[in-house]
Image (tube, rainbow, N blue to C red; front, side, top):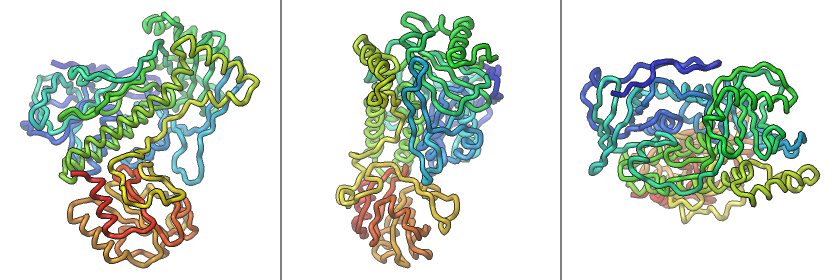
Length: 567
């Protein structure tokens, strides 16, 4: 029998709740489920919430009885916050989070590079928000429990997965006994050490870098703003790199690279942790300042991905599908994009709105995103932790030159995680006017948020009105949609396709549209490259653009929807 710990995890700032296990004996016989999600981390819970948003029920299995230990992922990007807004937890994230947009790199006591992430009035969220993962998981868990389509089961550990014809059979172990659960689709969101991936003997492509890094969260009062601080080749840790981040609740993260040959066990000895943190505090001018250790861990930099995320009835997502280094805040942020993509792709297959070709597209798009991230992350990793004497020579040359030469300083840039653009997606329309636009998000790109004017609602943004299905942004000054276009929209609705029409630009409500957003100053039109005579954008359920037209008619709209929902 599986016996997860019932002892609340220690923390200086977070109160862990130990939940009661879900036991089969207290529930009716288990019929086959549409979707079972193994893993209750960020990827698993966001997938469950996305599925529920599209009307699909799921079961979430967590082997533990409490949320994850330690701060883990702490930096969440703007796009991640937009995704979390869709599932209803962004407001709680921002209430206690620390927003920031600057990063500083230091060498030999001198600041040699200052990163500035773009931010303007059209952005609801800052480029990055710092929140410890326990809080983010708490908010997601509360949203899951409040949703009647999500069956959350603590203390349920998956022992085996057997693929049958058209479904998966799962043996689940609990503190009481084992039981069998059948699922049309099994989502493996069981983390970087995925037992399901290992049992299926699935190889990963990419590279694992030598060397280890320590994460140490300490409670301390430091007089620094919420900005990323990176120290290269410091005296107390020669040849290596140290990162520092401010976290909520008076916590600071000290993240340092270990010298070659030192084992994780040696690095996590209390005397080793104390000596190195004291050395770092002394280097930044705060020797002797009192501090307390909250949590520490060791990790290595890996850039690995499965070449296919869909294997029969089993779909991998998050760290179970790929392993990414933390440089550039890529782990959880990539998992959110995986989950958002998987949620709508799988929901539309389950509901019969598309064939399994749609799931193949999910795999193709997200594997492509993982490979793009791996390429970018590899550059950052090779700079932070040079894997060979040649790379170290190059890195050290950059460090030395940066003291006096401006042209090399941008090489310090850490290539922050950004949302992937599905430029070559088979879901993109091939006969629209994409190439004729001179501005605005192109096919495959994520949406551009825009602050709406006073007439549209003070403090409102475009993305506040998107999501839940396909969105048609129809830019017009006319009082009504053309009759033929209105009929095409009705045809889509009759097929069960969730399609919302948002008219943009008209001063009064547009007949035939679900919502009208006035654009009296033309700001939204300008950001989307819309000419005076109008245009239209079709957004997928994950808000990525799949078609845009300077001239839209009924035939072109139905063709674009047909392309986006392959049978």
